[in-house]
Length: 446
Image (cartoon, rainbow, N blue to C red; front, side):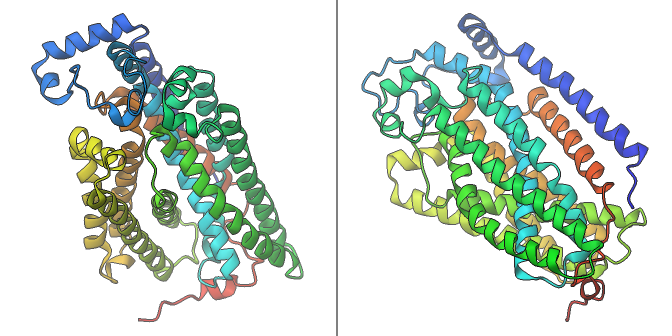
């Protein structure tokens, strides 16, 4: 049985406390009025570095953010008010990026776990309890995401412009989507998604632990059945979640590949986290039955999902860029012009580096190489989530400072504490699983 170490507790609580202080400072520093935001803009203009990097001029390329684009009244929102909303959004957007990033790791792990259960995989049962530990963050992490969304509906922030009735009234495109993009229907959908995912997690975990002390395979069979059903539910709700929680931040733009794109980022981040936690536990003397072959397989999934993510990124980018339809291409122009380094850097970090590191079969068996590749992948996919949310939420008023770092620290600390606490609540070996012996003897054929 795994016991939560004092070092993990101190580390996670330190991250949480420091993160909370930084988040508070970020909100305190954000402008509270239009006059404050104008003063901040003036200060930026006085700084030669900011004047070259921040583009805080009245000719902002704001069209992609939906305030004035396709509007019958080009003065629905003044420039000063628009800039104020962008600057005030930054701590909220930083919080939302970090909240979603760690939540998607847990959700991706749940999907990967369900796939193993439904496929009756023989190699992975020795990793089941690690996966179940990571999914322990699903409900608390999801509720925190929903809390941010609830505060958006209550107009504590302006992350989702379609929640502003005045904007909707003067915007034909958003108004045409108002039946779906209704704030309360939006929240109801969110609770349905999280409720369905959490119910599956609860019953699957229950059957998994019950199987350890069972004399037959009834609980295993139940787990198989609900896992197969859950995957159908997940495929639908994951796509809808990605439309609701991310794509609707920029309600003029849409992509039919977006659900798969978010899933790819979710899956590779999840498998990477499984690998990193498994290597850590093994280094501490736990998971004796996890061998190089299991880590090798996780490395293969890290490599494969990185290539899959790149395929979807390129497919989405190439088709939109080649068609050159203004309403679509502005999404990428905004990111290429105002987010040049994170946009192109993300491609290097998420594809080129993992490809070069993990292409060798031998490298996938070296724990420090998997760890290095895993850290690179997680950093890259945090930047991916950042690129999906920030441009539409804050425009070119972006940066990586106290709000972003503090939010990342807070949710990382919370994630670590919840995951490792969950690992203490059941044996780390699913000894009752009918494929457990096969998993312990798993050898990858060269």
